Structures are given as structure tokens and as C-alpha cells.
Length: 441
Image 1 (cartoon, rainbow, N blue to C red):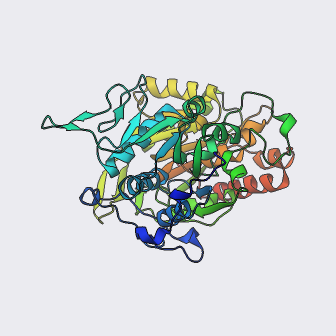
Image 2 (cartoon, rainbow, N blue to C red):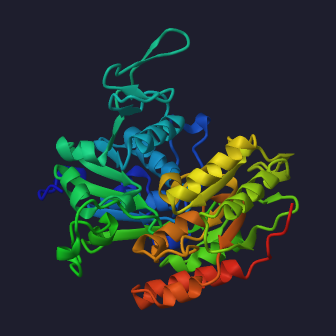
């Protein structure tokens, strides 16, 4: 980050209509998108996390961190911040995200809130969402043939791209910041005055391709997750207090994985004949054909079940579960391959099957999650990782089947995990395995 501070940018935030935060900001939250009717004059909710984050910027705080539970609306919050800054300030803003897909999804969210042509992405070999501009065509042609080219927009790039061409801006917003290393974000923000880091501390951390042993035990290690280091740099730390994806039973189950309390404000959802969480015990050799068949049959049996889903306006939608509503998440590629083949041959090829790493960020109504410790093979750090556990147990919106094999508790207690991390994994799994047993469908 830039060392010099632009004094002209720091002024009394109350002149912009912001409400000065008071008390504990963790229990306020900006909910939902700004309606299209308000896109011209974005409104802030007094006392909201959005208001607190903006106040932090205008009082000159170098770093603001917004921690989030799963499904709390991180991208919606980023879009609200961008919308307000574009239309109520002269600050220049740049957005970074870990991947190209994340950039496109975030750009689409921004234009849905701030209006067309307010987000720009670099040219890439992917379909650009409607309303998003690119380097090749930095304008849009409206339905009536008029050119849409607003005076201000934000550029959304990967952290890698920003590292190689540091944007000279007032504010950089890092989305999914817990998937970015401290060293990478520090380099990307080298010419930036202030940082806003938004992310879920329970998620899987960044993939490190080199040996990190030389930095073990160092607080500001280059490979550390970015918010964990920046939090010690005069940062204001805010927290989104609720999830809109998982129900309260699921939120309570994964609560040990988070250093802050949160609750569910998800509208009621249920699948007839299924509890919110069910446990399914199977044998430990998941590569055996009969074990893969159990998983495939479980997923196929959910297709066609009746979903009851309450919308934000209170309307209840009743419809059958489709194949694309169901997901199987595993920790090992050989399980993914075997189950995918079985489902495809049985006509259920549109059921999503993948690893926790590849499915991070997704959501489905029904998820079958296979405990990474359910294996006869030697337990690895990959299988013990609580971030992977968190991702697997927070992808569902209506139902989770937790699949496990005997011996998981012994595998944790005999591992080299720290006592604190081991305790988290034990507490979550004890809750999940105590749920109603999954029966035949």
C-alpha cells in the first residue's frame, strides 16, 4: 500500500450523510440489493456494515476488514459500496478477486446494482455478463441503439493482474480476501491508499505451490491469508452477522469454525421427507464400487422430491427438485470420478459432483457431503483442514446429507493438528453425526 496519505480525500463523513458508527457493528448488516428504482441515488441503512465501512474509508483508516459467514451476501455488500462511492464521491476504486470467474460474477453483481457499464473487466476467453464493459469495448449499446458510457466505472481484475500492473487508486476492495495471500495482496495494492477486505474466514485458504516451512510461526508470513495479517495494521474489523443460505440448524452446526457469532435469516425452505441435516454412515473404503453406488443412489433419490421455498416477498414456491439442485461434494478426485460415472450412466448426469476446492462459492438446495476423513488411507493435512470441512457443510440451502465412516474421531485425536483446530473439527462432526440417520428414499 502507498505510504503517503492523500489528505484531500479525508474529510468529515457526516457531510455525505453517513451515520457515525456507534457500539458493536457486528450485529448490523446491509441486506439485499438496491432496487432498480434507487440505482440513481443509493441509500445507506443507518448503522449498517456498509455505512460503517464507508465511514472507515472517509476517516482515513488504511485497512477495513469485513468478515462474513457463508452465504451472507459478500458480493452484494461490495456492489453497494461501489455504487455509493461511484455516485457520492470522487474516490477512485479498483476491485480484485482471486479468479477470472469471480471477477465476472462480481462485475455482474455491480452492474445489477449500480447500472450498466459501471464495471469493467479485462478481455478474457469467457462470456462477459450483460452490462459489463471490457478493454476492447469500453462502452455499451443500449436496446434503443444509444451508446451507454457512464462517466465513472470500476475495474474488476484478478489479484494476479493487479500485481503486474498496480492500479493507482484511492480504494482497493478485495473480494474473497481469505483466498489471497498477504504477499500477493500487498503487492497488488502497492499504489493504493486504502484497502477494504471482504471475505469468509471459514473458507479454504489460498493454494500455496511452494514450501512455507521457513515462515512457520511468523505472524506476517508471505503465505498467510491476507486479512489475518492486515488485521494487525490499524484495521477496523466489521462482521456480517447472518447467513441467508443455510438454516439455523446448519448455522449452529458449523459455528465452532468461526471466531464470531452469526445466525440464519434464510427464508424457510424444506424438501419433503428430508430433515435439514441427516447423517449417513458408510464403510471407510470409498473407492469400493458399493460405496460409490450408495452415494449415487442417495443423490438420485432426492431428484423429484418436493421443494417448498419461501421467497423474500413471502410467496411460497412449490416445485420438484431438479438434478441441477443436487450436489455431491468430496475431498478426493477418485470419488468424484467414480460417482460421476455411475450417475451419468443412470441418466443423472446433471447432478453436480466435485471436490470442495472446485465447488467453493457454489450453492445447491440439496448437498451430499463426504467427510474427508472417511478413508482407509493415511490421514493428510488436506483431509484434516477445517476450511475444507466448512466449505463442505455450507453449500446447501435446504438439506445436507453428511456422509461419514467410523474412526473419524480417532483420526483427529491422533493427528498433529493443534488442540484448538482439532477441537473445532471434533465439535462440528459430533453435531453432524448426531443428526437423524438418512433412510432409504
